[in-house]
Image (tube, rainbow, N blue to C red; front, side, top):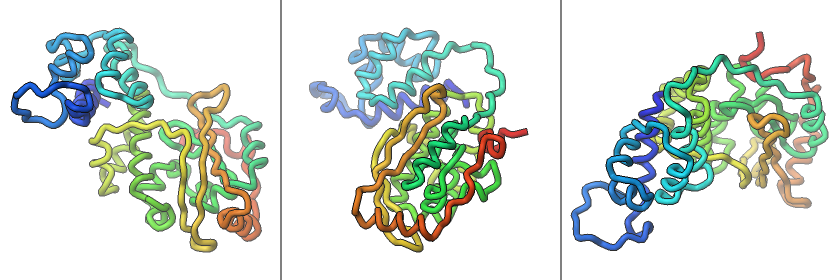
Length: 296
């Protein structure tokens, strides 16, 4: 990832999304040739010079302080995910030593046991770049059987954007797919040298008609909770309220649990799936120890 282009694209996109009225600026009589705020207005709101902000937006940040990043975040009305992303882009020293290869991600035995314990609801563990590291039988029944896929295809973004089944099964597909692209954007800011992430972005760019538009919006997201709607070919509509938790001891693994309202139609549908789709043996650490494509 070209960090300079990422900085420039993100700042321009966020500046264009804020109107002068939202920022509390009085009309100044000047003709606006661009949407959103002008560079000098962002600079004034952040308490920096126009020249300095211009260098930032040109991808020449130097070494800005955390205070500058915070001031820009306030001026641009950034949410928590966007603030995190701006910090990833601006607070990493340019010219820093290039990171070595990332260590394979391993799911510890206790987490496999937790997925089995949560067998009454869909649950799975995501790793870097939305790789599906492990899943229980209901997650595989509701979404897709990730374990039946080639190891490098066990990826949530790839499923949503490239699997034709996802468009039929995932309610509000466009919103969910766009949010997943925003999750990848956040990952790209944190891991600019991740070759497998770059390969995934390249594949999605070529094969998904919608991906490039969402990617170029520079939106970022850390998904923590929300709702999901699926239309299953066997049991019909299902509504879940999901919660996501960073795994203790490994901030790059996320446990995702799809909760069900008791005595709801979805609870009945899930019970039917549990009876029809007998749980396959959960993979143990020896059988599936690493992230997709990391083994070997």
